[in-house]
Each structure stands twice: as C-alpha cells, then as structure tokens.
Image (tube, rainbow, N blue to C red; front, top):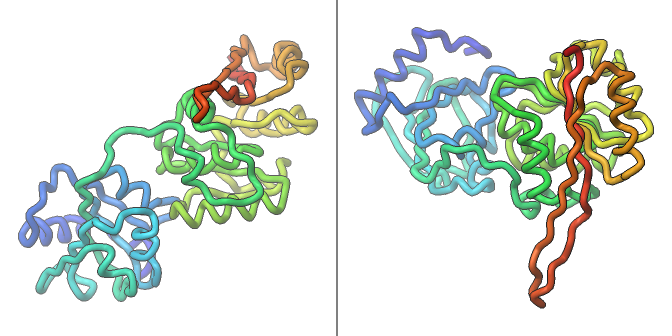
Length: 301
C-alpha cells in the first residue's frame, strides 16, 4: 500500500472488523491516518480513549516512542497483515516496544486514562533539556490562550520554542511554522519534536519571502519582540493582510512603543497586558518571575 490510500471503503471495513472482534464503542473512536501529512499520533492518543490508527509499513520505533511518552499502559488491538480479517490480537504498548509496523493496516489504540480537555501550560520539566530557557508555564498558558488555537489554524511562532511545541500539540490539524535563528535552539526544538512525536512543525531559520514560500499561510503569529520584529511583521502581512499577532516582550520601552508601531503596520487597537507570576518557595517566600508584556492585535480591521 502507498501513502494516503485509506479510502472511506477501507475505513468502513476496518471499523466493521473491530466492531465484530473488539469490545469498543465505535461512536467514540477517533480516526487518525498517519500516512497523511501533519498527523500527530502521540498527542491524539493522549487525548482520546479510542483511536483507530491507519499507518503504512515501517515506523520501527513507533511503540517505543509511545512508551517513552508515558503511554505504555495503552492497549493495542490489531491483526497480522494488511486486510481487516483473521484472528485479532491485543497487547499493551510496553509489550510491543521491540517491534515496528510490518504491514499497512489499521490498529485500534485504547487509552482509558485519556484526557479529553485542552491543557494549556505544560510543566517545563516535560520539555527536552537544551539551550532554550523556557518561559514559565503559567505565562505560556496565557500566550496560548491569546493565540486562540483551534485544530485547523496554521500558526507561526518566532523565537518561542516551547510555544511552538505546545501549539503543535493543541492544533493537530494545522501546521506550525517555527522560526529559530539560533542553531542550538533549533536543535532543542528538533529534540522536542521527536520527544512529543510531532509531525506538524516546520522549522525555518529566519522570516522572508523565500523561507515562507510554499508553506501554509499562517492565521496567527506569536513572536518575541526583537530588532527584526518590524521586518518580520511586514513580511507576514504580505502573506496574510488579516494576520493576528501575539507579541511578547520584557522591555517596557518596547511595550510603550507598540501602539504607534502597530498603527503604522495596520494592526488596529492592540491590547497590551502585563503578567506577573509569583511562586511560594520552600522557605515560605515568594519568588517573582520576570513579568512580560503581551501585545495582541489583528491587522486589516
């Protein structure tokens, strides 16, 4: 079988097969064809109790990656071969770590501990160690909520590595264009993409018409304010004159100048907030985190 050949007829046949052979409520099954571009297996299994996965032969470490992501207790219901027929088998993911996929087929993955709600603001310890100094999880949660992510949106994230990762998990049907100027930060981002099993992130090293050519046009851009910010915004507005922006800065002067800059770029009525987070430490004192300004606005209105 070749990529993207799972037609409606194939899907219905596999649904009928699992209906006849497994104790599962098909009304609640999420269908995921990972032979298609931008489909994320691990985040989908994490958030659904039943996932019918269609995959091509290969993926030698697919179950190891699931186990490494904390999904070892999930049950895999499958058969041998490429057709929905014959004896059915089931094993825990932790029992399948040493095997890959030997045929293009469907498999049912059951996760009774799935979370069905969006979880904004992952713990920083969940991310790969590397060169990136991650923003606090509470502040990341606010930024992600300001981006108003939904599964179909295409997003651009500039110098916001952990934002790109979490946005890719939340927006499983769209593409995240992650811009990282520093090669070490790109390596850390690649480690996170591998760790979370993400297939919907495209990494580029700067923003201009050449690097953005052929990529999905973003609906929303989140960026960390920098010397190249104005050039980046102008380039993105050529792609989407109605772009929504979420801008992060720790610099008061930059925040104070944002209304004038936004007006000159056609981003009307920007909303500017400052977030301060303090956490109680082991000595019963409060440690205050850096308090950024977050600017949001939409062009073309």
